[in-house]
Image (tube, rainbow, N blue to C red):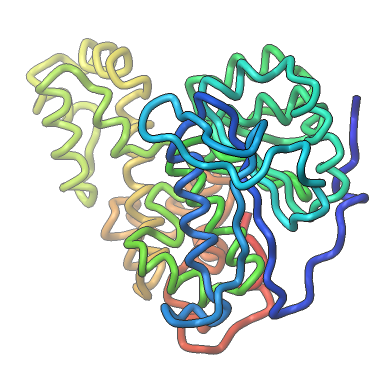
Amino acid sequence: MTHDPVSAAPPPAPAGTIRRVAVIAVDAFELLDVAGPLALFASATFDGRHDGTHAYDCRLVGRCRGPVRPSVGPSLNADAGIADVEPDAFDTVLVAGGVGARRALPDPAVLDWLRRAAGRVRRLGSVCTGAFLLAEAGVLNGRRATTHWRHAEDLAAAFPGVRIEPDRIYVHDGNIWTAAGVTSGMDMALAMIAEDLGRRPALELARSKVMYMHRPGGQSQFSAELALQTADEPRLARLQGWVFENLSSPLTVEELAERAAMSPRNFNRVFTRAVGLSPARFVERARVDAARRRLEAGTASIEAIAYDTGFGNPERMRRSFLRQLGIAPADYRQRFGSLTRADHGQMQPSDRVNPL
């Protein structure tokens, strides 16, 4: 069954309205998929102040009211069962992932509830393998979506009508939101809070939780730093660490091969097999990661950032950004930069919407 949740979803609540949020969890859920987003929503205030008025009323919904067991960790107490509440009681509904979510695929009661929710809540989303439940319910048909990278191929194979984007932290398509899993559910929740309350309260919340408004690596599940952790060969891991510390150097394949004590041809083969990226692609990705963190966090000029990160000039950096991120550096800073007029109390209309 195909649904059109965008056209059927209710309009946003008026400013200052306390929104109700539900997280759906079935037994063997992933604890962080529930606790992370709920903690952010429950802590959010309209003005971003710690002692401000809370903006969300949060509920945990299970198959039945009462204890719901995670795959590991302590049980949580569901405030209600799905038979006890109608979807339109909530503004936002998220489906938690975990091994239990995939086991629940044949559960007609859960699937029917989600189908009804698709046209009756303003936002319907999932964290990690919760996307399997949304896909089984039919609400992801024709939509872009993501899930944890370990399960992206399975989701794509099982539901060919869904356009899977496996390298994204979260995807926002109409009123359907999907997050990659575990901590990325917090990234998605923070983006929702920014959409509802504006950038400044969301930024204050992120600061209070010691998390990034937009994590290093932007919207990708992977960054060059994560790739560093996949190199089992010690000398390659050391070399990658040296790359991160010397991005302004030329970093040619010949130079890297010499530092690894290999011939360029052998080095290229060994590195690509170990890391999954060619040396040149890895260097470019490391430079883009470094440049976008600078764009997110500070006010240095694009020219200075291009020089400091080894691109040499803004045009080379722009081409790499477009190739890897599909966005130019100036536009990236406008969308993701932390130091904006919003941070100084000058909220812009564009700050009130999710950047991606």
